[in-house]
Image (cartoon, rainbow, N blue to C red; front, top):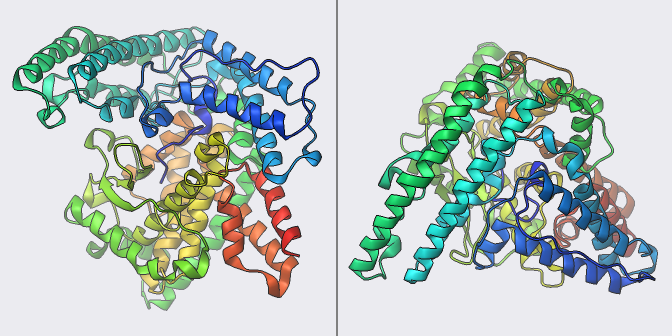
Length: 589
């Protein structure tokens, strides 16, 4: 469950990994107090992001000329940009401008503040972990690279040299962190090394190898010459640099890496976790409160699952029923293709109901594809891949490995989260809304985006997705999974739980396989601490806002208008979304 990472990607990527010259906004002697200042700042912020974000450049069909700059110097430069952005907006009164500009103002101030804080927490993040590195878009820069001419081939090879520089900078940063006593947990290290390993292989087996079909329009002689030079670059530059990183990870680094997990073990780690909880949820909520919400939610869901057991007339205990749901052959695919077929069959089940629940739908088509096999070991489920300039279709890229461990019980809940009415609707409605500033069409706040995904999964039940008891059990299974994150993420990162305790808790209270729990617990404590909280906390907020609107508006409440309001202004921090819904309620009155 995840996304193809629009503008801001995930919270952990926010400020420290952007790779381009900083664009400064020069505040006038007397800053403007109106919409003009907001729109100018929005344009400048978009230019800044467009020049730096690989995913944005790929989607816009722009060439990728540089890769992420992970240096502290660049993070400090971004912080200065954030300060200049705040200065340009300092005199703007949000009450004196129109509603959409007021939303932009609040978002810009929030983004600028995060940029200014980048240097404060620079040493507490690990950009080499599988999810974080994927979100930088480096792989996408190479996999989507065009090959229309020999010049494109030269550009690809030059970009490959920059990749070796990036890998070397990752090693340097890990070494500097280690010198400060901040090292990834020992159990995470093999996953990191494994994620880079495919870039050290020979020719066709290498992550960056370009197959003949991508060079189909080239003369045979040019194609052979390019592949010869590519093979040489991989052999002499890329593979040795990656091997050097992995030798360090598997040797000196692994020996020093701690057995403990989570942010709380590092100097300033608990303070940073509180900051990350706020950034991930965009709510004024504490780790302590989230932990309690999770415990209560798990208890409620277990009761509901027991109700399903009784309804089905299952004679065994709850433990037996959980084992049945996790192991019965009817819930497992025999081929990766069957996973895709099952996902689309469940998706088609609710498509006729969409007009009853949403007034507006995106133009972009959608479908499913298997995830790249090289990524499957480190990604639990898959992710939503947004449309690009090369392919206007949005895909849920599912994990097709270890079929015996991937129950299809949750197929309906999963695909409605990822495609309709989930991420595909939410992301593309924003992108296709030309009335929004460019930066807001591409924004992705995890609590909003993943919160909407889980909300959509729940809404699918009202659209007829879970009429069969086993399908309803699948929705409860996903809910147990997402709710358990509230307990184990805070447990490992704030309360100092060992990973073994988190694994045991998830085994007892979810229906995930051992393989899924292995990768997921590492994701929470080592890869993206706090990010997984956003799903369930966002969903809860969306339900709260809906029910408040329903109560306030009474008979005039229209759920389609509520959903169109939520999806109609792009991805918003939840505190900003709450103000937006208040505005909708006032207008509806």
